[in-house]
Length: 318
Image 1 (cartoon, rainbow, N blue to C red):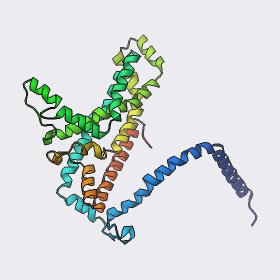
Image 2: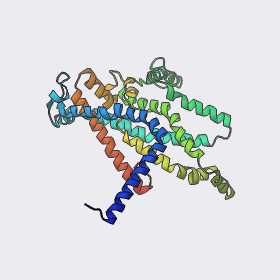
Image 3: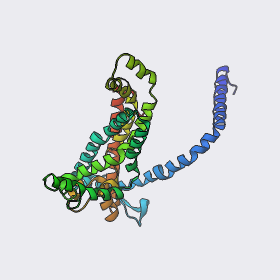
């Protein structure tokens, strides 16, 4: 069948576009080859394991596998909400995550603003090194440092309290202190590391803006509120959205190293619960259901936060 003039022009444009795309890919082939390891990493370690999430809806038997195990629908989720320990553990997780968002998220912004005001470059480098260093310590080492500081009998802090005539506190043995210890340890370890992105964003601000502000008589505080903070707002928004995307997922090791039989009721979180019940008691389906629940909460918070952020500031992840 003969083609009309319009159809012929459309096919020609389509062929031209395909050739153009292929030429572009060939031109950028080095970059595409460089991206292959990263793509394979995400495929092998992030996307393919997602298929194993189906056991959340099964009574998974390791000998029968995915295809032979019995499907149970939402029974694992019903079991999750009916389990006596689940709600207290969820409450612990929400409280620690909330404290993290309240204290640990703004801390790098404040430290970055303070470091930006230091005029001596040598002093600034020393300060940056000091605040970065804890990030490179493992949680096992940090728990050892915490024990040395917080021990009731030999801890440095309790020696200070005793010297002031105050009672010694059992920081890692009383339930009311464990959440503060976990949040404080995370704050000390990662605050300095979190300042890197903010300091890089501050470096990108046009110096002419500060010079113009000085000529108008603005002091350093006014320059910070009128120039630095507005310039940091897109970075703050993006990092905040990434933080709430991991709202219930703040690490297993960070909590596990501070738990003991005396404070477990107040410090146990979903991550440590999944380890204890899922791995030690081999309830794979049940704990996979809890893991999916965590991911779903993070996804919902991320979508809500992204929508609100785009309406309020015009910035968003997508």
